[in-house]
Length: 473
Length: 120
Image (cartoon, rainbow over all chains, first blue to last red; front, side, top):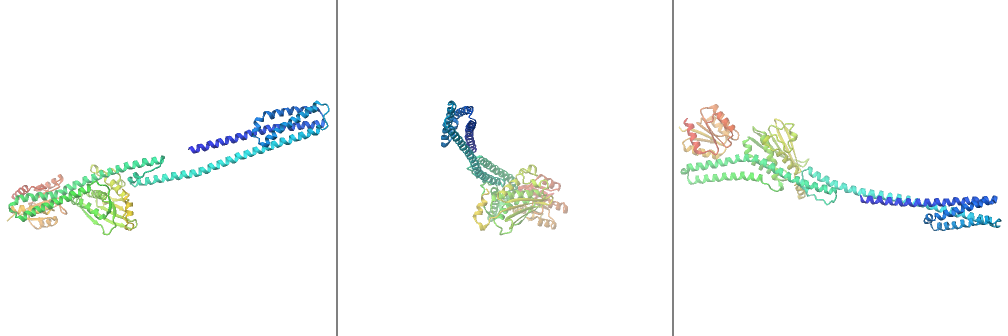
């Protein structure tokens, strides 16, 4: 902006000065032209006198000559400064010649008989006058056309330079803007993928409007990341609530066993030999181990740890979750059918997050089969898309067509007060952050199937890819 | 001739303990952790009393109760459950369950109930 203003001011000044100089020269040339016309008039009088010898013509000549002398003197200040060296000499000479010319005419008027060489002298003087005046005029015309040409050239050169600078500057600015926009575009892509942390980490050194926008954007992303973590935790607590009710029942079995054994032990104590007594205590100990395992699994699931990406066999994660939900599956009369072939490529995931997704999906499946049913869990590798595919299919009530597009929306629930509407939306977020994909297919009355795609680790490319995957979170 | 009792529960320890206690009381006791095998046995053998868990894999305690009501209405059924819901209790009462115990069961109460059921 400042540069543009300076350039405009310089152009304005230059044009003003140029036109001013042209104008002064035009005024001067007008004066010189006037003098030239007067000289021609005097020559006309001189010619008329030589033809008629009428003194009136000489008087007329003297009158015009005196007027011209005055004109030359009065315009000296405006004309002389613009004349070049030769021009100045000619101008001074012109004044002298007119003076001689007029005094010669005066002498002819006053003396009744003019001297013999008067006419010869007079004509020579007149001729010289004309030639000097024309020379002066010619010089001045040449000078003015030169000045105009100069101005024209300068203006064109100036405009050309400005145009050139503008083109270069524009190109530079465009490149700058495009660079900034591509930066923003990258950030937007990260946001759309839910990878807020990376956006938050983007530090920019740009001290301009775009830099400010990016900073604001990063700040927002940091907040969003925090919100997302909170939502995730809320979702986890919600699934934990459902899990706990199942686990509480599951704990009932070993507790009942211990209670039964203790009561029996007390009531038949007298009849037991030492080995039997030991066996009772051993069994009680086994039951406490069982309780410990159940509680341990629950704690393992509820732990709030930093996301930890590791190489995992997806089958191991599925097994853990099935174990966690085994009692729930049993009492809901849901039979799991596993189809997890060996030798599938490992995935680079945060196991606790994937567990959360599976718990959500399994609990949904259990709830979709109130009278019991089958839960099919299968994994496969799709070489075409280079993805590990995990399918979870139930034989439950299914989802109707109106609800199907909304199942991943936050707070969308068909379970009324029993659901939070967070389970699937959080699961969606988790899978997207793993650079994977989750899809749903459902047919009312027949069942629902969720398909999760996760990118595997390519062994051949080693830890670089692992690192690349890691930057998800 | 001792009275014949069948105890059905997924948990082997429940079966074992119940068997131990009831045998001391002088009853003849069969135990099953598999409800399908238990149902087979009920169809073949005339039991005087059935003690069964409600929630089991495959065949539920309620199914056993219905089968017994149909086959030999004089046989009494005592039900145990860790998941005592009101619905299940009402259904069991409608199916004329003799007694209904939430787990963990107090052995003395169970003994009394068994004695009473077999005396009636």
